[in-house]
Image (cartoon, rainbow, N blue to C red; front, side, top):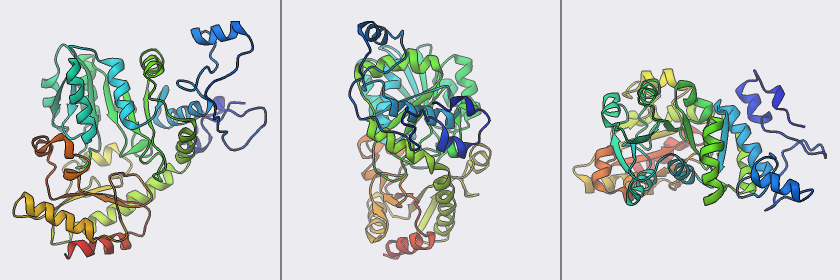
Length: 400
């Protein structure tokens, strides 16, 4: 029996462990995992009704599965959204959103400081007649000026990857509403445990569930959240036809990851702040990017908009030129023996990477320069280790 009618008024942590449960007649306590490609109908008439959409039951796991539904319902409850659509990855969530909302001859406005693969995807859509303009995330006037009559989507990350810039969601949402353009917000870094963009005016929330929603680096996944009309009428047909489907097993892992999201984020944010303050005191560090620091340009906005600063800390090292800055960054990374050198983030294990040569390599030097991603920049995704041990590990590279 579904517990949906009992969810109204429940707190975030309760929803994280109770939302989306629809028990089978067996009365299981843990959420069941449905590993099936298709579903059996009682008769031909029911099959016809299911395929026509007149019967709300399940049809085929490319676009409908009970385990996916449980994950979607729980994440929607946490984000305060009417509906959610799970996808195979964060990038497939972005792709499905663009395919559903934008067609040839139309236009996207995106913040300049987006994940490298996101910029590559938008540029790829240029082959099919969809143009993208990139604007500074924090410049509301630039957002306004970039909108054209053919603009169909505004897209941003906040905090941004990797410089942790903060967008003023209320201000940019107001611009989007004035022009009748939907605003999509990548909430991967903050998660609904720290901010709920739809409460601040966003129309769409995008997740790479691979990151903090899983939280342990186990599976890939993505999600799109928005109104019932957007999800079911506009985006579900795209997913049904193109098939970037989240597997039932991955959905089950992500569903269980949501149960500990709040406690993980609370601890990782506290540790990240401690590490960021320590990095600011290191003589070989030129600058630290972390919204929880008073030195961050949007610190006051972050305090208003988020519950905490997040778990991503980026820092820039001194260097006489690009080559020496990169050498210094690589020395810090190579000096670490505890931290994991990997491009992923959101794990309980702290990860470290050099964005210019990894996650943002393929967007090219000009785009990296425009986005402020220098050769001396290092991105740290703080996990659940002791902050003292994280700092001690970084010391090995910083002293090199």
